[in-house]
Amino acid sequence: MTPLVDGFGRVHRDLRIAVTDRCNFRCTYCMPAEGMVWQPREEILTFEEIERVARLLVERHGVDAIRLTGGEPTLRAHLPVLVAKLAHLGVDLAMTTNGVNLRHLAHDLKAAGLRRVNISCDSLQRERFAAMTRRDDLDRVLEGIDAALEAGFDPVKVNMVVIRGVNDDEVVDFARFGRERGVEVRFIEFMPLDAEEGWRSDAVVSYDEIVERITAVFPAEPLARGSAPAAGFAYRDGKGRFGVVASVTRSFCDSCDRIRLTADGQFRNCLFATDETDLRALLRSGADDDALDAAITTSVAAKWAGHGIETVHFVRPARSMSQIGG
Ligand code: SAM
Ligand code: SF4
Image (cartoon, rainbow, N blue to C red):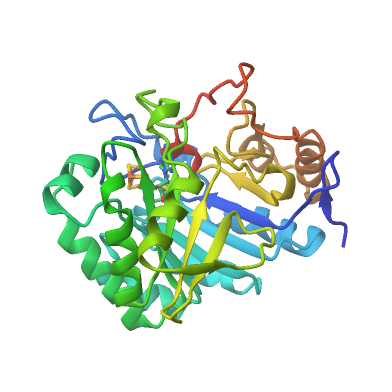
């Protein structure tokens, strides 16, 4: 077993797989309202191709966590079949979803071996939710959260992207919601990966501000931090936890252990990477595992120190979040 180490000594064990680029939402901070062109089916990796790359990373390089994402992963037909294949690899298998389809799928996914689920929800107010996602589906998402809890996922986490002037007045409401429902809310700083390039630094609500607002109402203590991107907090009264993903104001690049595979088989060594390695071409040209491995190892070795969002040198990646997978 050879760990996947980059030039800065960071070991990579966490693989994110986008299983589709399609989505049934059009979140304002992620996708344009119209005009998304989905990748043709034949360009999307098959389950067998995904499993081959995942197996290689697990068996040769000790990858021990896999997260399925998208687009919206639950739109991929027969998703439980893929989950079962990946669960056999013995990894911590998780999924990030908008939650709309979980009321139908939660049990099958759990039975197939999915361990954890993060559900994205950015407003608890119906009209605002509809404006932010361009879909009037808040009730279905809330049902999805309940379905995930009922199916026995533990923990169930809720991801809220906090945007100033849009939903930042709901930070404490979400903390309360998490405490009441027994879910861990992760507050995410708005990142410059929106398809419409509407990101501005003053729309970012910082880690400090989020923590201050929550702890003023619900006192909490910071938890020790590992490689996880979310800085965790435990409420002092024992009613659960919350997390803050501060990719902008406190980037966690120094301890980043993530690598990514897009739905069309491109390997990315960073969420913000500006170039990719074409594993699909290798997979479909009969390359053996050593050739695949060499391409992956070379990409990881070339990983940069950090994304540098705060610097003048920052370049937005050509793909938006919905195509990379978050
Ligand atoms: N469709 C699924 C969902 O919404 O959970 C999975 C894909 S989505 C791209 C993954 C995560 O990225 C979601 O939690 C979403 O809120 C987050 N995200 C999308 N655009 C973002 C942005 N510009 N800044 C911060 N987070 C973003
Ligand atoms: Fe779709 Fe998720 Fe992007 Fe929203 S955040 S548009 S649900 S991929």
